[in-house]
Length: 208
Image (cartoon, rainbow, N blue to C red; front, side):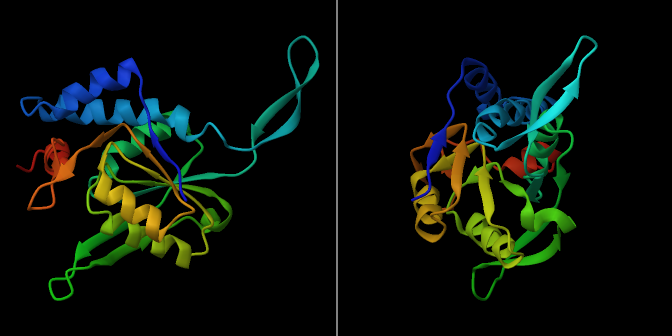
């Protein structure tokens, strides 16, 4: 079973208050989302493997440690873009792939309309980024697409989730750990997380 990690920290709580506030400006919302993404990166990367490297300092030769595997950030378009730069500031060597999804009006299931991944993705640690884990359908489908590209090490990274979405990911992808800044109580009849923060994509890009 995958591990659910709800990351608690005073700075994250403070910035999540700004993100949840419906009166926050687009600028404040976007900046806060990026800042929270950067803060939770410490926890996301806590268990990454390191390898030893010989380094010569100005004073002497010593042993230092570097990441063993490359990191690839894959935001689900478009809301996932709001967290990407926050994570990339903490891991500037990370490459970025993209996956775009829409809902098929006949099947009501997610469907991919765009996928572009770095050549190294198969051997990398992949951070699948989407701020809201609601029903879990989009995230689960995106993980399916990554696995078809032979990715074996995937972490889901979001801001707010609910039990329905967490349960779906854990049932369908028990090998993918889940990282969230908050776990909310439920979904409403329209599939929005309550209390949530509204439509994250619209709030990020000022389209509503």
